Image (cartoon, rainbow, N blue to C red):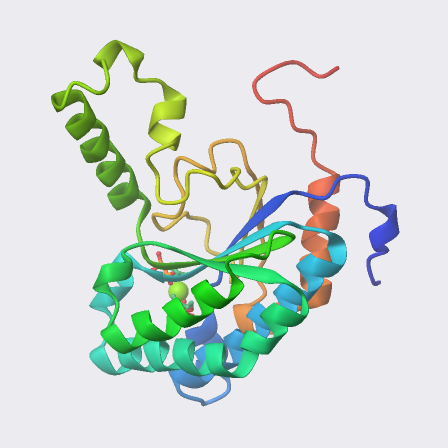
Length: 242
Ligand code: IPE
Ligand code: IPE
Ligand code: MG
């Protein structure tokens, strides 16, 4: 049965997604892993459309982890090419829906051509404020937290900050995108029950929605179902039920 968006009382401001299962989706159809990733790119478009329709402000997708560099060079290259061709093909949709693109991760580690192509869209969409689409690229949460600790240590060394003044906001303020609110909902496709080094700090109090659906089969309706599941959750933040 399809979800009635009007019936949803709460819409999360920020939804983060671990897009998993492209390889298995392809394997089940006798296709190549890259075919799976290509079909998965269509799901990203679908989720962006659905999020805009539902009024979700921030969407973060885990597209490539620091650990994914270990994959065969052909697959890594295929993913980088797919990123570039997807930007070429769908940038107009970002403009049509006034969606700002942002990147979270080790930007410098990406190939030059990919950085250049990304930079073009980052610049072209930087003034949009209604919706933000964040791609986690060469992203690893432990690395992000380690980098934050290093930046804080440098400030302490320079005498700009006292160790006794370091609090949770200090740490949050030194992550890659300090101005973005924490995700309230985290969706992982393909049934794996793990975080795979994704937003460990930011997801402390997020609701998790794990679905067996492979990422290429995750489209508007599946996204709305996740929002519906979120509406059924009782968020207590360590307190007692009111
Ligand atoms: C997710 O699908 C996409 C990326 C990690 C880039 P996978 O490629 O991990 O697909 P499975 O898990 O092997 O099915
Ligand atoms: C998580 O998927 C990373 C991304 C979705 C980019 P993986 O398939 O790489 O993670 P594991 O191997 O299941 O932990
Ligand atoms: Mg996987």
